[in-house]
Length: 208
Image 1 (tube, rainbow, N blue to C red):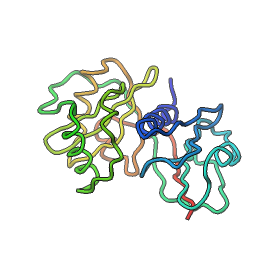
Image 2 (cartoon, rainbow, N blue to C red):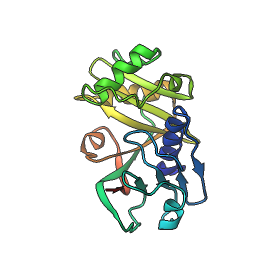
Image 3 (cartoon, helix red, strand yellow):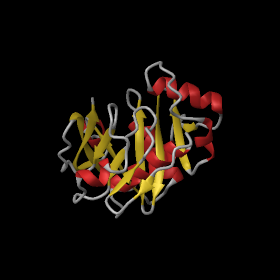
C-alpha cells in the first residue's frame, strides 16, 4: 500500500505547482528549493532512512524553513519541533448519503472555503488553478476537506468543521469507491471515532 507520506508529499507538490514552485522527488525525500506557501513544508521525508542532508541540501534552510519528518526519525540542528502528529488510515468507507456535501468548483467558492478553513483569514494558499487539478475540495454546510489520490490510496487533508467526518467519508466513498483512506491529524481521536487507526508518528520541524 502507498505510504501516506508519499500521498502527502504529492499533495504538497501539487499545491506548490499552483504557485509556480517546482518541487523535486528524490529516493528518500521531496524537497522545494523555493520557499513553499504558508502552512506547507519545504521538505517531506519519504523513507525512515532519510538523513538531514536528504532534506536540507534541497531547500532554503534559513529562518522560516520547515520540514515534515514523516517517520519522526530526524535530528535537525537549528530547527525546533513545531508540532507532532499521527498518521491515520482506514478501510474504504461504505456508500452513504453525503447529506449536503459537494465539490468546490468556482474561485469564489474556493476563497470562501479557505477563509473558513483558516478561521476567517484569506491567505491565498489555495489558488483557483487547483480547481483544474486531479483533486477534490469538499464543502459541507459547516465543514470541508481535501481528497487526493495516490495509487491505491486517497489522502484526506485540511479537514475542518464541528463534525465533518461523516460527510467526508460519504464523499470519499462516492468519488473513490473501494479506496483506503490515509492522512494525519494532531488529534486523531475524532477520526478514530469514524473508523481510522493510527499507523505512525510524524514531526514538523521549523527553523526560527
